[in-house]
Image (cartoon, rainbow, N blue to C red):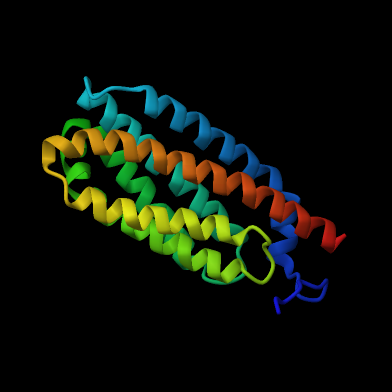
Length: 191
């Protein structure tokens, strides 16, 4: 039997999130558009790729900081992750050629971290998010992509990086759009 979210269980951070449900919708749309742009690119420009990856990390960093700002628990974790993403994104934009090669080398680890975080988040949302299983599937897919990309050679990783970065952005966009409507449902419950 699944737990139902009652008005008593909705704390201040959930009420704030409920009012800002559209931020997740907007972020999901932006991630979706980025994924389309990424999946249409080719590997002709390593510099362009380094900059695009940097932008993805900065966007993810601001999103994590936003979550930390309105969260009632684990604020420091969200903020730290956001700051690390932004710092990494700035470095990637400053040194795009080195970024591409370095990112291709650690691609599996990055996808593994995202996959595990999404799986944990899905399990946490099981009690109040009817669509928690979509985030779970996205997390499992990221873990599979992590192991697959780790087995590739560097020249193959360039193409893998191109494809998987687009898939990552697409999954991020879809899960953010789903979260926006689930958060909107919490807003209606709080009203």
